[in-house]
Each structure stands twice: as C-alpha cells, then as structure tokens.
Image (tube, rainbow, N blue to C red; front, side, top):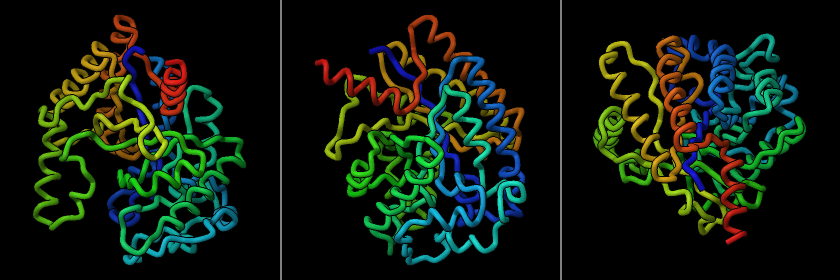
Length: 333
C-alpha cells in the first residue's frame, strides 16, 4: 500500500475552549470558523485533499431543546466543575441563527453534502478522559449520545479524536463497543505523552516549550508510520497516530514560518517515499486570526501533496477510508 496523507480537524467551537479561554480573548477566532471551513472545503477540493472533521456532538443540535433531547444519560462528574460544558446550556443562544459558536448544524450539513470528507466524533460534550471524577460508564454514555445525534442526521460515526488528545487505553474498549473502528493516537515519542501534562507546572512548561520548538526544528523525528504496521491494537481498534500539529501563524515569529512548513513538507515527502502515513491535525478555530497567512501556509502544504501524489502516488484519505483499506488488506493476507 502506498503512502497516505490524513488531515483530521478538531471541530469544537466554544465547547472546546470554554474552560481555558474567555470569549473576550477568543470570540473573534470562533466567529470566523464558518468562513474558514468554507475555505477549507474549497481549497481541499482544488488539490484533491480529503478532510476528517472530528466534531463535538453538541454542534449537531439546532436548538437548546435539541441539546436537551440528546444529553447523555449520565453526565461526567468532574471533580473540577469548570470542565463541565453542560453548565453553559442556560447561557447560550436559543439556536444557530442567534449563536454561531455553540451550534453548527448548517456547517455539518455542508460538509456532508460535499461528499469528499468524513464526519468523525470528538465526543458529545468534549469529554476529558483523564480528569478526576468522571468514569468509563459516563464516557460510554457520551459516545452513545454522540452517535445518536449524528445518526439522526444520517451520519455514521466510525472514528474518534479524543479531546485534548487524552487517549486512554481503558476507554478504547468503550469506543469499540459503540461501533468506533479507529482513533487518532498521539505521536510515538515521549514528548507527546499527554500524561506529562498532568505533572508539576514547571515540568509541564518545559515539555510544552520543547514541543513548540519541535514544530519548527526536528527534535522528535518525522513521526510517520509504515502503513503495514497499522493494525488493530489490543483494544480492537486501529490507531492512526498524529504526525504533526499545524501551528497557527504567530506574527511575532513570522520569520519561523518557513521552517514550520518545511518541517511538514519534509515529513510528507519521507512518508511518500517510504509508503508511510503522515497525519496532520489542527482546529479550524486556530485559523481564526491571521487568516490569510494561515491559508497561505496550508496551500503550500497542499501543493506539496499534489506533487507527491503525482510522483509517488501518495494518497489523501479520511480516517475511515484508510481504516477500511487496512482491514481489507489484513483480511486478504
């Protein structure tokens, strides 16, 4: 099997940042997401790139009443109450026409109508799998709700991206029981173990700094994965690990942008030459500031993909497309 290129997008709007960023800080980014996704679809179609939108289940609702209709049977009992998204329900707008940062049904419909892309799950309520207080039963109920609200739009959910990349082995079984067949794991390098972020503050800051640097200079390697090594793990799911987070444009560090994009293009080329997977990800709201600069960088990556596709048959795929190819290949061995 030739090399593959996956892009997964953590589509969450305010539900993904409410516990970390105030609307005073970030509302402009969130308000711009609808237009950003429109541009992403146009640009990806131009270059033949397929996208996997890992979408928070709450975004499928078109009203408060619909949110309440689909609420999980058991809500997460986080020890830290600020992590609970459901406390926001009374405060948000009534529907998408009055509140575009908590509802996105029209955007989801547009993605589905395009036909080239996948709707994956980012859990129903941006579930924090590593936080104290919650349980695997509550996580399972969250997945049931996410699948139900999608299914009622005739959308089949087959893959998952864990919020905050909090992949938890014990919870993968619940994913399999709920019809999930693949997930996005973290890079296979110690710097990207999310449990490191549970350590003391000074250690967290150090690891974040090194990871930031890794976005511009090669510290952790290319983080590409031989296609023939991608098989079901002990959970019964296929891990399609991340290769690189596409960091948004930072005006103060504009002089590093060429290094960032070069790092990504080199890894893509390595994957294409060696029949490996390169998996790029980010959040649509990351593009909400410095929009033109972010799309300029993205187009440079898409142009590289087009060259590698023509020369080495490097193929873009959604998470479920590649998973199904792998499963079929393994059956035929």
